[in-house]
Image (cartoon, helix red, strand yellow):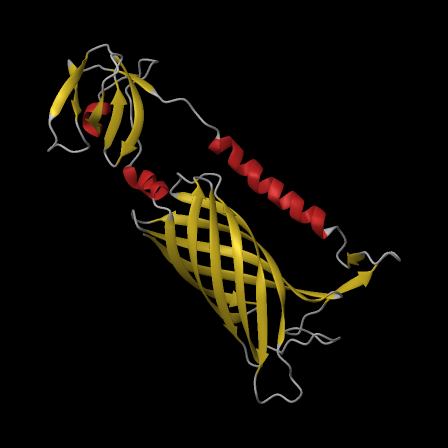
Length: 280
């Protein structure tokens, strides 16, 4: 990689020109389009993707089909049975913990029922009730994650580590540190991202993200008249997660970075990476 310079030179051999616009000092990128309008459009897409999934829904109700449904005082077979719901009684599902469900009977009693018994109930349409595996529910209950990835930054090797916090079923906030080492210089990236998962309960779960941060490019000491360059960066990401276990998933992504060298110059870079992450 060639070193970054804030003048008329290239960054890693690439140049993205920015033309000056009206006399009031507004700028227009050579590629056309308003950056503020583009950012607003991307945020709109992130929210629009999540809205159909994040709408509040009423608790589900089922009908007891067996002679009775056993209510435990807590989630686990070792906890005592304190009440039952009889055949034909309508019960409300309040929440789930692994393979146990907290329910409320028509008489107002609340207790825990095993998944085995719950799958013997009927929906209000009279169909046998089924429940998805606990893997995804466990995932959504875990707020923190940590991961790493390997990839390329305009064909130069790149190592990234990140930590994320789930603020909503469909949104995460991530902090990323990345390092790329080329033949002529090394580049460090530090940025925060807002990640949107429109379908977080799918085993193959797509996501998109927008990020903002800083970069530092340091030329090799052997180069003459090479100066360190720092500046802001923005990026947009599209990727896919694959959940392997309750605490581990794989992740692939494509990311477009824009390094803001100065008021008159930006430089685009493409990142392709794959890695793994853990919940804790």
